[in-house]
Amino acid sequence: MLVRRWALVLGGIATIVVLFVFASDPGGRSSLPSVPSAGTGTTSTTNQGPSATLAGLPGMPPVLNPNDIYSADRPGQLSPVVKGFPPLVYVPNSESDTVDVVDPTTYRVVGHFPVGGLPQHVVPSWDLRTLWVTNDQGNSLTPIDPASGKPGAPVPVEDPYNMYFTPDGRYAVVVAEALKRLDFRDAHTMQLVHSLPVPCEGADHADFSADGTYMIVSCEFSSQMLKVDVAHQQLVGTLTIPGSSPQDVKTSPDGKVFYEADLKANGLYEIDGNSFRVIGFIPTGKGAHGLYVSRDSRYMYVSNRSEGSVSVVDLNSRSVATTWRIPGGGSPDMGGVSSDGKVLWLTGRYNSEVYAIDTTDGRLLARIPVGHGPHGLSVYPQPGRYSLGHTGVFR
Image 1: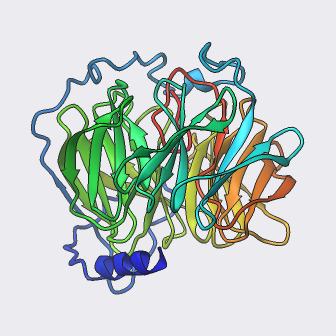
Image 2: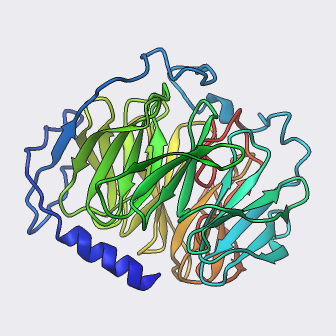
């Protein structure tokens, strides 16, 4: 894994960057960070081509509240599909090729099973009925029955680093990082329907526009973001942010801004998805990595992996309200918010542990030993009508 990652980093460094001057930030937030040797601008190219109507992606469940796309994610708003599932936390251990299952009430590991090589994320399916473990180097997906917490027979799938689901529920979008592809597969059978080559290194994370017509994808090793037409499964734009290392991506509640956590810039780039340009920057902490919206849609939790902290961003003012630091340090990475919104769960990527953090005051509730290299854990079940994938993006 390290060999492959460094190869991708070197490929990203070799990328030629054409510069374009940043638009000024009318909101008066912090200026964009300096990027030595790469200049101070971005390159944004778009080719909108054919796209779904602004009314939304055909077949997508209607947006309940245009001002808050997460309005179906409130505490207690569990779908009838998941109401009988026991609350558990599923932790993929990338270096141990296992999954640990944690009881969120006792903070103890209550289950443990082997999976394929290099499991990266535990991904809730669009219909909420299955959890998929993405076994990156194992070239497979391991299904988990969330009613029992038990795994099933693996399904062959090439290079599944991460996985998302189109908002209409038709396709799983497998992020095949090493193969430089986005593979659109049948959401139920996982049979390949269309493979979209991507012109970047280290495609990792993504999120969808409020109307579901396009998705924004981060490319960790080539300082790029991609814009993909969902209906036509076509690349329609690229955005280069010099000196950056894009990580997680999350859409704002009003759908107007895409936030990109940046490992090198130590904060969040704000991107206008429609014009596909950077419109601002919010400094958070060293190694900004994972993004999670609070149950009331007021805040976004940002895991700063390199400094062992979590920044709480006020989504109204688009500024950091407070920062929580893990006692004794740590490496907070990927995770999710509990069903009631009271606990933020994150893996300690380089510490073989999981953190449970009180969202009222940032207090560390538990530090749970797990396997080696824990990565994209999933808290399940969670409120929401359907899942867009990753570790649990619900709407």
